[in-house]
Length: 74
Image (cartoon, rainbow, N blue to C red; front, side, top):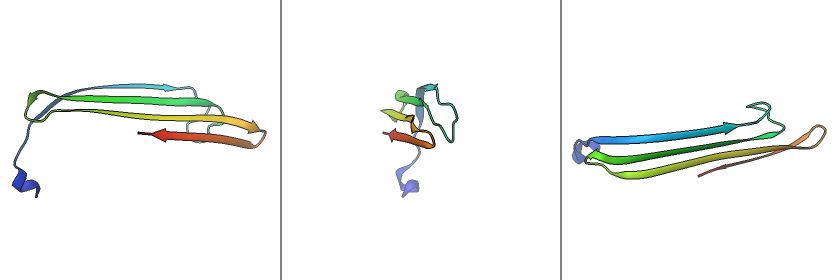
């Protein structure tokens, strides 16, 4: 199917922003992590699109020995 589609040329620009205040990247007990990625294609070439991705995580210690982490991605 890809061979039937032919070749395309993509020219794009991307931007990435990250903020990480977690005390540990694997087993965080406090802090947050946020990442934003954006890509814009269509400056030249025959493909055009806009794509945005967001990741976030919040970690809080509830009581000694018990941590709650929430992770969200889109």
